[in-house]
Amino acid sequence: MKQQKKKVLIDINSVIPYYVTGRSNGIGRTTLELVKALNSIGDLPVDIALFSQNMKGVGARNLQTRFKGFHLYLPHREKWNMMIARTPIREWMTGYNLMHIPHNFEHVRSPEKCIATLHDALFMKIEEKAFSHAAMRIMVPPFVRRCRRIVTCSEHSRKDIVETMSVSPESIDVIPWGISHNVFTPADDINAVRMNMAGRFKVRNPYFLSVSCNAERKRSDILVRSYIELNRSAPVSHDLVMVWENPPSALVEEIHKSGFAARIHLLSGVSETDLVMLYQGAVAAFNPSSYEGFGLPVLEAMACGIPAVTCRNSSLPEVGGDAAIYLDEPIEHSLIETMQRFERGEVDCAETGRKGRKRAAEFTWDNVAQQTVNSYLKALNITL
Image (tube, rainbow, N blue to C red; front, top):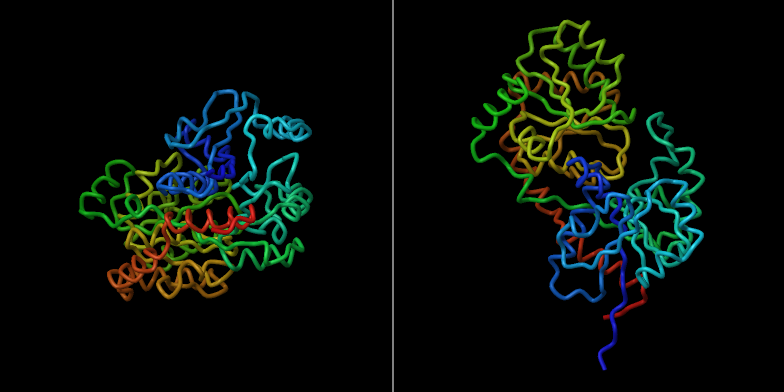
């Protein structure tokens, strides 16, 4: 008699904003890509189901996979989740053997039946105004210590998790994120892309690109000020394009007072299609972060065949390898020097882009999905 497969329930609540607004954060994007890649595996050794919770009914059917969906018509809010965690409602609904929490933390009744993806230990090491790090420092460590296994996306993150949360390294699987190579790819016609950028975003000059947010560690303010300083010292042929949803008003005012506001483009509400074209049309992409659990913008830039400029800290060298251009500290000086190298044509963009594409080819979602299945099997004590 054929043995019934164990059921793995994946919490897809981090994906929901994509289907409501058309945009999602890095955690939502990685979760969506993981589910899509798992769906492409023909004969899985476990049964996978998807769990969602919201009042709109947005859930598994939106992802259009073969996996069964379970939906709880309650708000996905802190107080509701804490109340739900006091009951076995998810267990009754789904009958799962293992629940995958791919967004760092969730209030659950039985962490011992969970595998959690902890993207980094940033909140244990850095205090950022834009995020509730104090609350995470209280909630996350005891949760992950009780989970059956932990998945993280870099060796650096594993080291930080072990050191800051007293988690056994043997219980942590490192699975680097992948990238959709059919989406993030070099332009077929670079001139057409740049004409599109000129029409859509009024970017008519060659440009440097940065994909950012309000986290202080991104050091986007330093990039902007370095660009302004470079313009003050000599005429600059490149514009600066910042994909930045809600830049600080003080910095926006500083840009307007600088006299170079026409050269600095702050873009928000950018779709994935536009984001890819922005990468494709850029001369280089700058990611001067002081800490990353992985560094998806570096991988995205390399996959699109443009030079990726980043820092030699945290997990970033694990992504960039020998294909990225690295900034030295203090980055205020290094940023200006690196932009000047591009201005003077001293960077072989074609060769750097070729190396980047070769490096990016090592990161695939198919590989992520297969390694994730292996983590499920270890958590369930299944040997094939």
